[in-house]
Image (cartoon, rainbow over all chains, first blue to last red; front, side, top):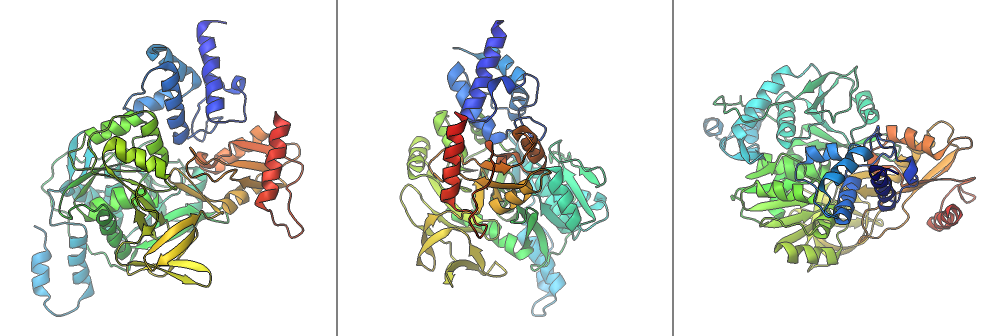
Length: 90
Length: 471
């Protein structure tokens, strides 16, 4: 598996476990929107808050203060993983 | 500055309602303080003068109609749209969520509705007129807003909740009630009444709590709201840091828990207020210690607004502000106040200690509150049961742990031939994502008793059963 796919899978697992979703990690599609009415998972801002904390702790970085930017970061699994890759310290 | 002086002089003894109201509206909206800050955006103060001018301008270009659905996210623009509706004799609708379904339901109640929004977060219903608001409040205007009259008994806003039938339930608010609420909110902070205060709120302006603290208090008192709705801990810190002291943070236990967990540093805060869900004593103590501040918990509801407050780290009982009192009548508790049109039943279980103090004993079983959003379980059940192919269905709150992280729902559904994903997708179009069940359990039957009633015990047993099966 290429390295970025490993991360994809890891983060998908984390989303499913942190939010206690009934879906499985392989059903979290890389490009599908994570949040809102159109999102397959129908996640909301409180989910984003819980995920951000968990991801920040796991990968050793802080999300930004700019919420507009965070909307982009949480747009999809793919976008989220790209952001983790760029900022992780562990 | 405004015309209240001369108007008052003309009217020594004679009661002429319209002119009196004009003078009253001037006082209510602090028209005499045009240079007061009502909001902050990106570290820049936005003044009352600009707010009134922008509102007068918007009032002129609102499409014909009597109702305005206010979807503005930016609190300055929300205020502009709200005051524009006041000026032009329109009623403001505060939708309970941002789904197209809710907007269509509102349009069924108010056929000549128009939507005002400031971004892409407003639902799009092509048949309804929509006004996009992009005023930034920065252009300094010298134009004084025209004086306008608001009758204290006029209904100026409907705050919507999802009602027990699954349709939006309107909570009408008169101007007199809202004016009192703006002042009341400011009073409970326990700060000097004339002192300018700057506030960050993490809750939307469309819900009663956010409306009272971040819209009404700035309109009626020297309180200025940060325009944003920061979510992540660093965003909350940045928003607070962009404001001058004394600062107030209006938030919820969910957001507070996140701040503590992230060990987020915050600038000095004079007072934090928390509402929408029970605040754990332990969390309250940690927050007060970490941020060297006072943390007040507000007990309220959409129908009545603020009912009581307590300093959770020190007090077990809630105390009502002056002019609010509680009465027990036939097994139900009612909150009463001069500013409320009538007694409002309290749905939570309380233990009344005096007319103005009580202990909270339990949450109402039908109402679920998640991060400032509130829904009736009966209403959610009605929506779920209305989905094609669903024979029977019920939402369930598995645990009611006030110190737990976030209350989430599960649903039991009898729907032969439909998948859980199908149902989730359909449900996602109809309800706010906050209330989407974490798990949808497809079951053969819902364990109703002979009278069709469901007990919590039966549902807990069913949950146990399905969870064991899943693993």
